[in-house]
Image (cartoon, rainbow, N blue to C red; front, side):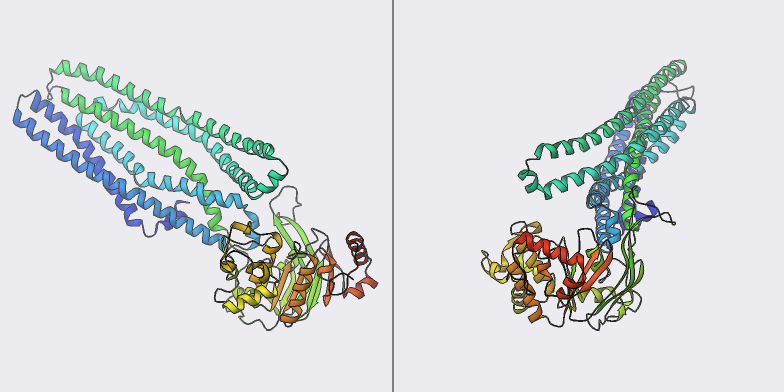
Length: 601
């Protein structure tokens, strides 16, 4: 994973390399300071020489100043490099998500992607900073201090070997217990983000049903699980500090005991044993060695957390879209004709309640052996019960999904032979869950064609029956829309989404239940405008009510992924019992009869 993520340090590699080098130099100078202090005490203070005190005092000041300079420099470059690394990583992840096909998007929940782009990247960023700074400092300090301590007195230095096994086994036990907890915690974070997003998105529903307490309980349950897991992990990690302190104090006591005996026996003579200055330097090295071990233990814990975050980040980066443009793909779509030839489609899932296929993948069939021909310029209505796979069928046309079996043709050509961008530029979709983005009405419309003229904007608004209400807005099409278009009605949102799609000037226009929030009169006006203004465009309309498709050139009835009947309104009234039942039920419910224009008789 380090190799996979390291390339995202591009542009900051010099800083990432310079930081540990400066940290190593800082550590080396810190190791030299006790040496100088020992000579200052033994040769200056005990030797009674003021010149020696001055000489070694100046050396101490210089060493401390240079060490401080390297430390400050590393303190600046490390966070700068880690922030740049995190920025590159987030950018790469976001760009990768933009390239996902619908199947890849289905694999990751929205909450999970948000957590990976935020919390997980932050964890990896902190680990990166610790690696280039503290992880360089701790081992170098440990190695330099051990070498220096053995040079001062190799017999006393053997005391350090007592603490090593204690700390090693302590970290080993912690890692085996803490790692599974962090694996579980990050998945729970996804659930918590999902609860928060769902609540905020549906706040009006929550308040209208007075379900605030229920939502609070849901959040508390997930948050409580995270609290319990983190508490358990922190309790386990809390043992590291006492273990390190125990090792430090044990070494100091043993050093003072045996070192004091050696000083007394030698009469503070270096040639005969040990001096007071050397004992002081040994105590300093003890602190440095064990603090280095403590820093390593902190890094160890952080890397355990970062490892799980890195795995989740790599999953995003390594997820490949199953749909891509062929080499030298066709860029010209001849016309808006659409053909489904023996098409079967299966959703791939990871849910446990779905059956396994022979390949061991969990799948659900959505379409079965669909054969359908749509001439260019036709208006086709798709009706069927919720979950009958109407949306799935039309999503195969612009290759939002690819058919599992069979062929989908547009303009007489297999859609898989087209350049993906060229194909989608000629197929405009108003999705069932289409949204508007925060910004002005005009900015949202320009998503359809960023180079559209004001005249083209007005024409799109006119055809979608949006012109009247847009003109009444405080600032016209410069009026600001909140995220999701929450400050306008559902019907207005749908009409603006239709206008946005029309600006693409497509050969195929697909409306996926996109007039459900529009009244019948406006619905009929939109369809009339389509016939008059867009006679050459193939129009596929998915609807729940027959009034939205009654005047179509062909109406297709879909049930459980199969085409049950197709024909005009009059033909289906004679030949299809299902269609007659839907028609009669809707007429009985509305209390009016419908003409072929979708209006009331």
